[in-house]
Length: 410
Ligand SMILES: [Zn+2]
Ligand SMILES: [Zn+2]
Image 1 (tube, rainbow, N blue to C red):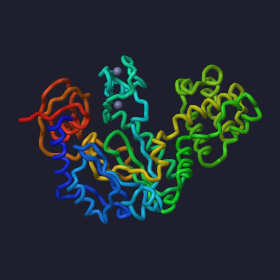
Image 2 (cartoon, rainbow, N blue to C red; image 1 turned 180 degrees about the horizontal axis):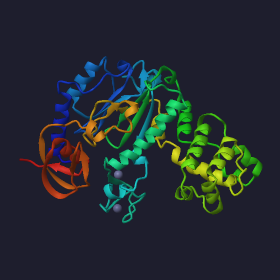
Image 3 (cartoon, rainbow, N blue to C red; image 1 turned 120 degrees about the vertical axis):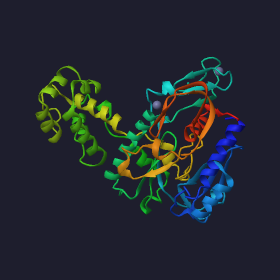
Image 4 (cartoon, rainbow, N blue to C red; image 1 turned 180 degrees about the vertical axis):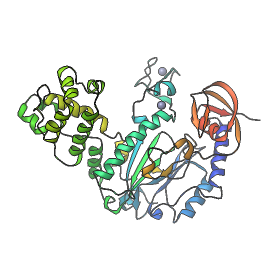
């Protein structure tokens, strides 16, 4: 982003925060939180700030004109003190589900990397080291792509379901947000979880990511051990797995079974005697009671489903009890989109490309180096290669923030 583009984006962000409808919503125990601001020009994070109330936070944001606003998931006695003297009182439980951690087929189309040393560049996932010079520093360009965000959303659905059904958090404790870039945030805000330390939070992480689920492959060959594995306990993760296995078999086609590694006789038997298989093997836990399907078959299905079903979260975020997270109702410096909260029940039909759009008026002239096709609201834009164009402000800011365009001076 050149200096003119930076000034333009900074001015637009500032206008947005100064608008009369105060976009930043209130926050629970705001005076006990640490705030942090990332600055446009200096490219530094100003940390250890605190505010007595939401009004002061809004004022502070207008004065500082930051590109990004963060607050601590933690509650402190002295939010402005040094880390060791803050007096930690507890923290919300937060989850970050970002498309960056999910392999998608479209990243080949919209992601780019440039070697910091020799400028060698390519598309798709960033390599470990530069194929040309072996350098390990890259300038990467991702994209808030609809398909990528949808795959993050699917992970969020799994996570929210576990939080509600397995952990018993109520809908009012679970807050769901679009992150403003490539994913979703889930915050659990309730007294009960506040005192949990990192280790306790790691256990929650292990549960939702399916780590330590005892389906150890080494026991498959031993009949006795196998029968123990598949005596799935009727609670929590195992109950969830068993019901997933039932659902899978119930709806399975030959292709579905093949994807789980089930072919030949086992596949034919399952497809022909579905009802008997469901009743005997799964409902009665008699896993090897139908000829042609053995423990190995069930082990394959269980492993396949475990992989599908785990929620892919950024585990570091959840276990960090001092974590800074983006403030609700603020703009993301890499997109110009908003972090926005929406009701859990709208997780599937929430449209970030409408609801998270902040800049609704005006246009801007930009020069686009290159950009994939994208949608904002009902309008499709691009793809663009090396061209000057006048676009609605939101689209122009997205392209500038993503490093795909620069503003054109009149
Ligand atoms: Zn290189
Ligand atoms: Zn994508």
